Amino acid sequence: MPASMQQITDYLYELGSLKLVNRKTYVKGQSRVENSAEHSWHLAMACWNIAETFQLNISHEKLIKLALVHDLGEIDAGDTFLYSNDRSNAHIKERDCVARLQQYAGNGCENMQNLWEEQETGTSAETKLLKAVDRLLPFMYNIKSQGKAWRELKVKRSQVSRAHAFIKNDFPEIHKWMTAQVEIAVSQGWLIDE
Image (tube, rainbow, N blue to C red):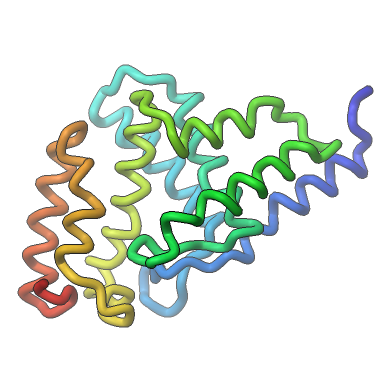
């Protein structure tokens, strides 16, 4: 039996809760941090743009869906800062949240949980691009804000370099640009030179 409109709207309200999850990334102008829903939209657009620009042979539909489900687990788990000591366990609560969302009567996206799992653990071309761009976006904003979040949280060059090293294999052009920006950030005192 199809879901009722009330069940559908209940589910859509629950998805909208992602707007309440604040991240550590300052938006342009540095006056506030972005929320996870804004990040998910930006991630989808950025992935689409890079896929087109680099003329990648991937499924754009799958890529956009992966980007849209990417942070849904944060509705319950909140955002875990990339350089946090708690990062290795963040996926547990996120996975539980996505399973909960999948069970909503108003959810018409049958494969949402599978897509979330793929973006979390998969190695497809779409997943590789998603993971690279997911790291690129907050990195860009740290550069644009003169390292505001990095300086506040005392982030080190070694942490940033380690967190982005995987990009070199699949997207060397992106990695080269990021490496050059790290040098600027260190020279400006936005990153601790350790």
